[in-house]
Structures are given as C-alpha cells and as structure tokens.
Image (tube, rainbow, N blue to C red; front, side, top):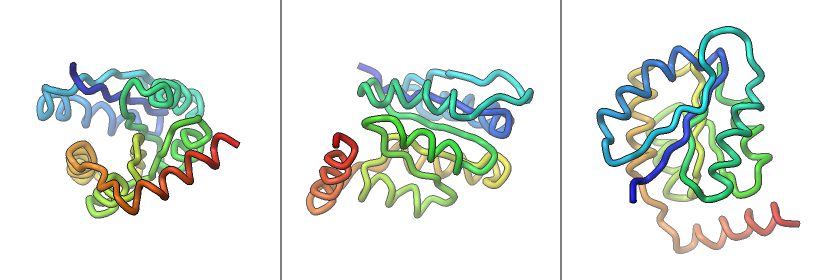
Length: 149
C-alpha cells in the first residue's frame, strides 16, 4: 500500500505548493500525494486547509504538508486537531529532529519565508527520516495523553 501525504495551503503558500508538489511527486513515486487546496492566490482562511489535512492525518490516513505565509498559522491550527503533531520547519536539521524526536505527522512551511529549493530539501528530509522511538516514544505518549484529556 502506498504511503499517503495530504497537502494543503492558503494563498500565502500557493506559489510554493505549486512549485514543490510536482517535484515531490517525481522524486517520491512510491508516495501518493493528495492536493487538498487551495487553488490560487485569492485570499482564503488557512485554518480551513489545516482542518482538511488535519482530519485526514488525525484519522491515521497519512501524513500532511501545510504551507501558509509563515508556516506558523498552519502549525497552530493543525495542532488543534486530535492526533496531529505539526511542526513549522525552516531547515533540514529541524525537519530531521522533528521526525526523529517528535514523530511529527504534519510539516508546515512558510511560503513567504522558505526558498523553494530549501523547502524541497526540508520535505525530502522529513519524508525519509524515521522516528527513533525509545526515550522519545514516552514523550510522544505524554503529548497524546494531554490531547485526550
């Protein structure tokens, strides 16, 4: 079964998504990427797209990539969804640690902040880095416990 990655953006992230998604599909043919919007640079509300992706990720259907102007709004909104562990990423080191230590299942990018080539490298790192488990698993379990209370 193909791994699934759900991708969403607002108007501030549309240009980066438009550049990034075809490269990701070409680089990772073993992953099924689903574009959940938005469809242009007309203003939209980023929480709507964080919800679309977050619902899928929270149900365990796959991982997510969200892009807005700074990445921050998407991360805040996505983290309101049960089962989502979203991180705003700006370099490959942070992307690697977010997967290894935090088992993030949604990555957020700032379309107005992160250059396209850097964003591509961040995505590659995040998509190929595994969760280390061990001492980190107990911490992720505490986070899960916090969201279920």
